Image (cartoon, rainbow, N blue to C red; front, side, top):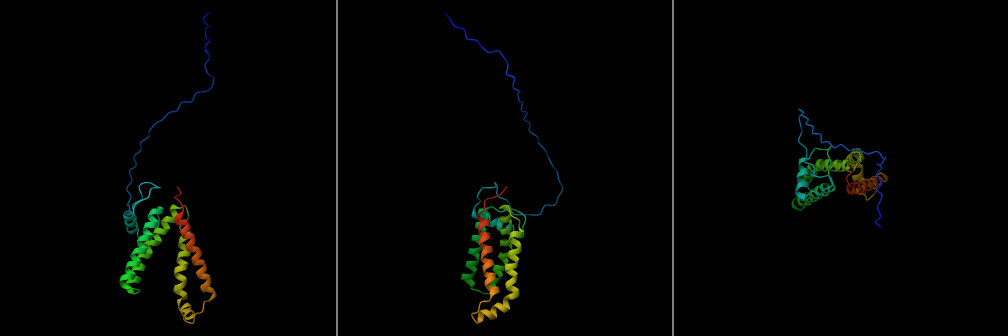
Length: 181
């Protein structure tokens, strides 16, 4: 005898969700003056090459507001070291070396400021200690030169050195942080 299977004809009482997907296209037209800034990496976490990094480093000479990826920062730092080393090897410590350092100082500070912003920190975490560490020796140079002539180290020189080392270690750690969105 054949058995018949009973089918359930009740409808489900659970509410159904309908998802409506629409694509909205919006066109915005503005009339603003745009200042030239360094190009940004195509994707946020994508490593850009050394030549693009050096191009961004040079084009972003006074750009303190953008973002720099880790690879852009490290290739820019490598460029600064290579140029400084080459100028030192060719000309020694002199006027040309000092001019080279002054010309590379501003874009490196801008690059570091962009790296801090990319890591999710305020630029002031970099700018205030950086300015202090570069301005304090200028004001204290005469005193420190006299002390170092007699092989004496003062307490303020030791404290300055300690805080400078701590600051640069902090900058190294920030440079290694991943990008924050």
